[in-house]
Length: 307
Ligand code: ZN
Image 1: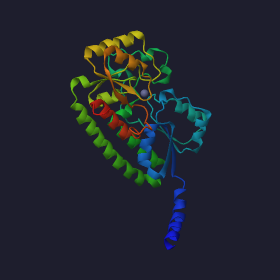
Image 2: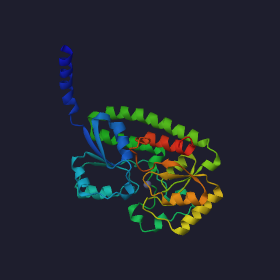
Image 3: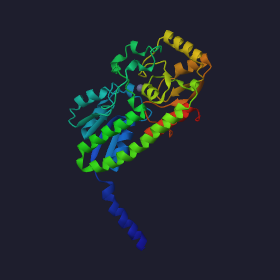
């Protein structure tokens, strides 16, 4: 009996805590930024995201209900680099007056054409350029060192909006940055040991420019930087010829991209599907439900240890 009362008392005491308002309400443009912000903010911050796991930010078209979500928001965190240009229109439409932070602020952007100069990408000539800042590659988070810069920028933004929580954010960020640093070292050492024929990776959309530069790989993609780009028949034929010449053994699919071209390349080159890579979104299917899990998944897929 005493024990039951004690449990009831403890439950009652913990309730106001559970119902307490978060110190900050943050809205991010896509799922990877949501994860970064949750790692830093912990229980002090309520973080929601406009483009969720398994969804494509390139194709996002905000509705009125999305714009209304800005009303209860203290800080908006976006990627920038042309990845999520729709957030600027939403901020204007909602007359939002809170902080707006570009997480990629301190990184050095790669030019959009970086992937490969001889690479027959036709993605930017099909009229979809308006979805992109055509000059830079937006997928900067796939280099872990860039992700660490994102984390520092988000930490500073949370501390500025909630100075009473600054020490809490700093502490969480330091622990998370240490994990990211270890992840970066693991990616570098594992991928440096790969044989040459595994260093060319074919994916549906050209999201891996930063990843390729950071970890010494070469990525080829039949589509351009955005999932909406459709390459010409000639571009696809040239890519297939190149893959035959390079004796590429494996091609990869992506969870949110159109894989029809990859299937055709697989048939025409005899390459096999090496697994699914994640680039622009976390996944609810367990193997990429956080940024670190996403990078570990891609590492295992490319290094050949995964299904
Ligand atoms: Zn993308």
